[in-house]
Length: 167
Image 1 (cartoon, helix red, strand yellow):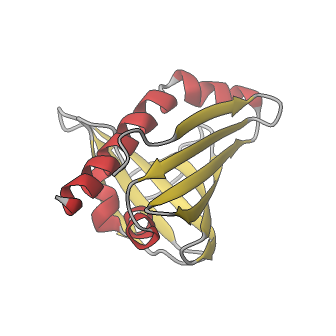
Image 2 (cartoon, rainbow, N blue to C red):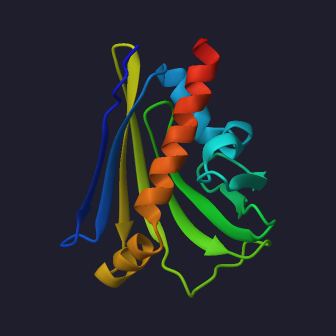
């Protein structure tokens, strides 16, 4: 079992894109399920001590996940993912946005275009993520909100899920 898993987080200001390349100590099947099944997503998608709560999810092209990030004091920040492309166990793409609890877009925040690819390498799985924003200012707004720190904590939560399954 590897003790140091790959985690690269880069920002390309010229293309308004965040790239995250992350290794997980789990099989492709396990990692794909963790990213595409609401029951597992809710265990790790929000950075601790926050929790993720899925209201609805239809993982198919044209489908949507509507979920909240719930804070320690019970505050809720709603978001949605509109799935635009799915290639099983290889890649999926979606448009991410903040919303209200009914899935109406919150236009005060930028929408981002996620491209999530999966590849197995030996006993581990690599997830390669490109998150494209319409403008540099949209990208900068997300970074200022603490995206890197929050996403890093969420990835560690997923590591803990995989570690608990192998022990």
